[in-house]
Amino acid sequence: MNQWEVFVMDVAELAEGQDLELTIRTLNPGIHKYTYKRVRAQVSSDPGKFADQLQVRLGRGQMSNRKFSIEVLGEVQRMPSKYL
Amino acid sequence: MAAPRSNREFVEACVKSGDAVRIKQEVDWDNEAGAIVRRVCELGEAAPFMEKIKDYPGFSYFGAPLSTYRRMAIALGMDPNSTLPEIGREYLKRTNGEPIAPVVIDKKDAPCKENILKGKDVDLCRLPVPLVHDGDGGRYVGTWHAVVTKHPVRGDVNWGMYRQMMWDSRTMSGAVFPFSDLGKALNEYYLPRGESCPFATAIGLSPLAAMAACAPSPIPEPELTGMLAGEPVRLVKCETNGLEVPADAEIILEGEICPDYKVEEGPFGEYTGYRTSPRDFRVTFRVNCITYRNNATMTISNMGVPQDEGQLLRSFSLGLELEKLLKSQGIPITGVYMHPRSTHHMMIVGVKPTYSGIAMQIAQLAFGSKLGPWFHMVVVVDDKTDIYNWNEVYHALCTRCNPARGIHIFRNTTGTPLYPHASPYERKWSMGSQVLFDCLWPVDWDPVNDVPTTVSFRSVYSQEIQDRVTSNWTAYGYPPVK
Image (tube, rainbow over all chains, first blue to last red):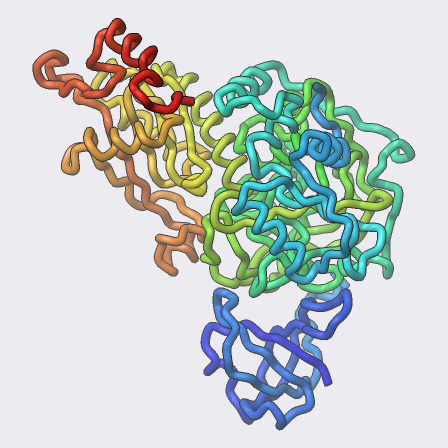
């Protein structure tokens, strides 16, 4: 199980039942904690629906008290290849 | 006492004077180190030198490096007990002299080249980048540092303290405002051409190099550092681009600013004492090389409610740079002071009111200068008011500033996304407004019959009575006045 976190202005941005493109950061312990990825994912307000947990923060870093689960479908590479 | 030439010499000098403490027990980079630094700032305590960082053996942190005037005095090689006016006079004396050019040294003599990571070894997570505040958008690599760039046409070098957040192992995003030197270079040159801008980030600078990077001076920062130190700063050439960086810095990141790619940055605890600027897609830095000293020390500034070095040093340097500007225009000012607790938003100017409109002239110069976007209040008091004494300034503001004639609002000026009082729209577009509080008696008032006389022990009693009362003070039964 992985732990992820996402920043949103409004929890309504986390629409259920559809593929979303999100910037999420890992909360897994270790030196890479808090690094980001851009991913395609599905989320659910049912914390048990998907294996990975998703914590939500709002625009100024406030933690939402709602818990989500997430399934990461794949990584989205937006960075131009010349920088890779 | 000589000015410390490196962060290491500065830490030693601060420990020796009692202005830094060595923390031997392990500290977690994830919130704990930040919380220590924050509490130190709020209590005005000695700077923490954290010798053991969880997950990062061999690295250390130095927090709140310049959040007190004592440490600022030590940085300048002065007695830690120096007063603020004494420190200010010394800063003006040194920075009014001839620029001192840096020297470029050989790589083998540069401490910052003791370890070099290139290619697949480049991973920012190999450095103890702290999560400074819980809820920040990321771990901040740059909170007390210098981003080094060079103007592609003019060739002038810029060291700026643009905050930098680690996005992934090789990518950082940062807040670079459009009115800043780097913001202008990006918008005027690199972005329209789609060209990458070479950069280097120097962390763990000598305190005077950090002071120069923070100061809004027109003098290029390498020369300014030399002037402050009284000797040339040592630079060394980067591994992967043509820039030169402080050779005695603890950590150097080299790379390019991407003109065609942006990632999210923020939110972040800011010097205003709030998280104000929105999370947004900001200037993106791609790191190609990391060099660092053995047992490198990362410097951490934890911005928040007063007082931290962002507030203290920016207040100090903004005030003194405005003093230089106003004196260069022949305005008979007695001094300029910004209290750090204003989070460098209120400029207090003392002036001899010799002609009409002098307060307005001061405000127009202040707000219209390069310094202007960083503060939004100018308070002008007369030459008899002690600008360093908030009680006197507050009294003048509340009694001499006429609500109809003394308050002048400047609209449609340049602001920053960090202003808590600005609307979300104004923050997004760096739109500002500013205000002058003119606390001078009008020059057309008859000084004898129209201007009120101040009623204080100092002003209404003869010297003889004052002397008699002060010499008998303890005999009256009062404790001695310190």
